[in-house]
Length: 171
Image (cartoon, rainbow, N blue to C red; front, side, top):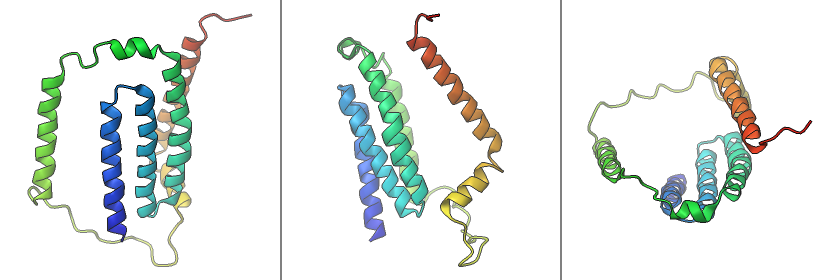
């Protein structure tokens, strides 16, 4: 049954994300992106990462999409729809898509180097850490530096957005 739901969510992710990049109406594309985020959270639930599923819904489908919708509302959508969108990149896009499709097909058919066998988890039954505990311990130990770099980049982006939005400073 889990495999059926996985295929359902995977098909939903692929279908909704293809619709995101093919819609000419940016509002429809943003709403389809929210649908893609919900399908992604379903895959997280199937993988046993309920915390990441909730974060996916709250942070991305909630917060990031509000930011996208504010950005869309601030720009002049009628002018941007009439602009040329693809700038002569069709040939390159088709070539890269065909290469990626060939690689995926080759891997599905069993070609290439096999992945090493799964050796199991290091903990025993009943002593497994929770999702939040495991995520926090790995995030603040092994990946502390990339976490801090990402937070500084997000802070710089927020300051840049405030500067761009506020043209004049009132004193």
